[in-house]
Image 1 (cartoon, helix red, strand yellow):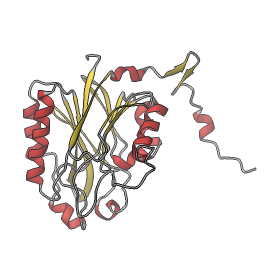
Image 2: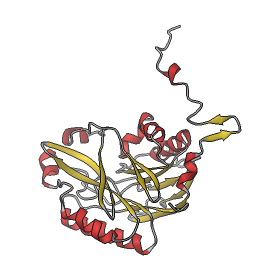
Image 3: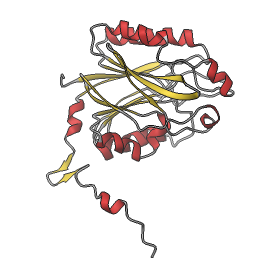
Image 4: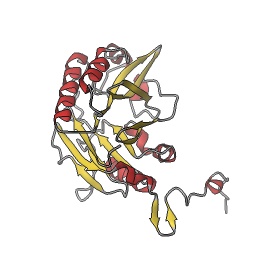
Length: 278
């Protein structure tokens, strides 16, 4: 693998329920990324379907499987390139309905991760995933996958760091909320903390557009392995791209001083103990 990887978050504005239109938007994004020499393209959560479903039945009408033409067309589009696409989709999985993410390269769908921590009304629409997040070995480093609210649970990025992830790709739909003007939104701060505490790169791709009155933070961001923001969307910029050239394998060095290591200094035998009550 080459040392540098060009990582892009494409902050698209999916149309609720219009799978055909969203597929074309995704494919245009991939075309732009290929033209721009992108190595890892991260797209939003539920990019194929939109997010604010009125009920489960509406989501089911917008659900697809990995047999959908989108994935065949993506694979064909990637051709001889080594680009990786991480895309959120509404998945019909047997009798389950999932908020899922596919990792796709020129060989096809490498893996599918199904969101395990559902946010707010997602609990009324989707079934939570049953399996932990994957790490995929690629030409541009080892890529782990989470979805939005998953990142708020420290155990999730830690699982991926322990499994060898260099970069964690996080498709998101971050609902807009109030925050102090001096600070970034809390979700970005959480991504910075997760990157720093695990010594990994993190790329969070938010979305744009207003859906049934719901706006979004539009706060796509790429964070380095020290927790610093290296690229981010301008405030309330709408549909835009965030691109950064990073060196994912630098995440394999977990040293924080000549005598410290992010993972090596862990004391799991203590963490498992019952907390004493004084």
